Length: 75
Image (cartoon, rainbow, N blue to C red; front, side, top):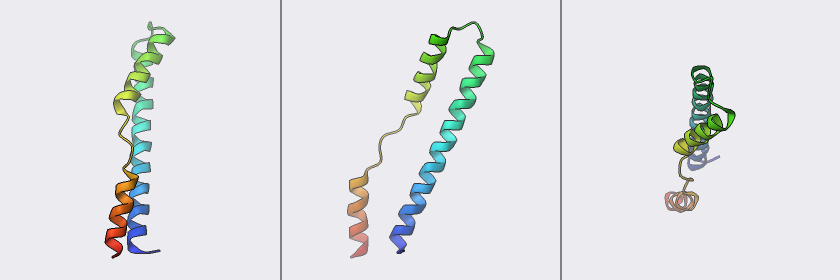
């Protein structure tokens, strides 16, 4: 495994860890909201959960740009 492959692999691992942390934070927020606002209905909770997920969603990774940069580094 070359240096560039190791860098890309580590970047994917870091991205996975960030996504996992984001998911845990959303789950924690969802549970706290259900404890705090018990009188809200299931539909209201679902809408608020969806709003949080949409707010936290990030743009997709630029795979094409990474491949081009990798080719340039190999030269």
